[in-house]
Amino acid sequence: MKVLLVYAHPEPRSLNGALRDVAIKELKAQGHEVRISDLYADGWKSQVDRADFPTLAQDERLVPAGASKKAFETETLTEDVKAEIEKLLWADALILQFPMWWFSMPAILKGWVDRVFAYGFAYGVGEHSDVRWGDRYGDGTLTGKRAMLIVTAGGWEEHYAPRGINGPIDDLLFPINHGILYYPGYNVLPPFVVYRVDRFDESGLEPVAERLRERMRTLSTTPPIPYRQQNAGDYSIPSMQLHPELGDPGATGFALHVKNDGGANEQ
Amino acid sequence: MKVLLVYAHPEPRSLNGALRDVAIKELKAQGHEVRISDLYADGWKSQVDRADFPTLAQDERLVPAGASKKAFETETLTEDVKAEIEKLLWADALILQFPMWWFSMPAILKGWVDRVFAYGFAYGVGEHSDVRWGDRYGDGTLTGKRAMLIVTAGGWEEHYAPRGINGPIDDLLFPINHGILYYPGYNVLPPFVVYRVDRFDESGLEPVAERLRERMRTLSTTPPIPYRQQNAGDYSIPSMQLHPELGDPGATGFALHVKNDGGANEQ
Image (cartoon, rainbow over all chains, first blue to last red):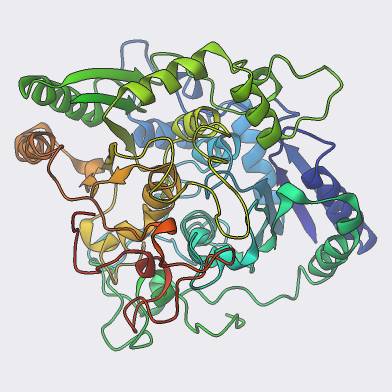
């Protein structure tokens, strides 16, 4: 497989840096081709602004979605964004690796999503009408590809458990896994999460590294999270409500959008 | 009251710009003092990196939490960050206003959180031991102050309903409301959300503006979301699990951490 790893930590000599190297080495050992987007090393520009749309007239109002649509259609996105889109089209699998800061991704990685996931590429794809609300949530430009997160977190695993104070890790990552990765079509694998990294010492690395190697060895076979496809009949269109008879009677919130709360099944 | 509005949209001539002006005007009409952090206009630096820690030796490993702690304690945070902390301490109420991009805040605003919410200021506050896990989730530096979100979203309101395909809006905003605002002590008010903004036209502004004015008039009286306080006896320490007898039997996920699923009560 071809694998793109997007890496967002400012310090190469970090646990994240060590895990990145473990992942790359194991992927290569498995015969995969690997490319890296190292956002800090590359000096990635984080924020969406006028500079992203060079053809926008100086006094023209910036409407981000509209400007993104026009720039994607006319191939006038900036070169850094075009290069990332090319990598995403090249890769069979995308890995986003980051430290969880304030229960989400670092700003630089959010800026990678905000800028690279252009209108017409990652959203605004397909027919939008009363009977179809575009190709998204399981359909889209990136359908058939796989994606997964490698995440480090400061707190204890129990704090992210179903009744833990931070909220369940799967729910905290849902806006990313479902809203960013599943949306343009990826099959999203369960995340690889390392907890308690604030007090991590070198002697703890090897068991974590081995767990990560195993995930890299099974990158092409791990069953994805069984999110419900928008266009497979589970939702009313255009209201996009899950049909009343679907979902576990006790399920609420994000869990409704997973076919089987008990675990991952092949889609 | 003293109100700080942190605003994150790149175009002043946008719906967000119009709503910001409506909010400021109404707050001032109510006799409140208002200060603005206009992140794009101010050229806010989005990403956490070595430049945030001027006293870090050139060959020293950057550990973001550790560097943040040291810089906060020794008052060597950068001037832009110090200025924002001063504003947060000054304000009785904080408003974060942003367009929802990819189900979260724009990178520039995430970078404001990542950089300004320093260790010792917004996290890592208070005693950490087997019997107390710091002052957070209802306690902390910003206790007694209020916070709320003003958010614009592209999709329909139904798509963010309890059974809507995007996931419920309150759950999508939980990592921000609970994880970023409640964590350092804010009382978090229900968010002000405008939907379908991609097809918004000027004629639709007035009803939305009036709804926002009403929220600004009631900023000091609107009951906050009744999140459960970490240190009020609902959680086991240090595992931070919600006690088994608490929470609606049917509740799962984020909803467990709200005292009353039915609505907001004064804490």
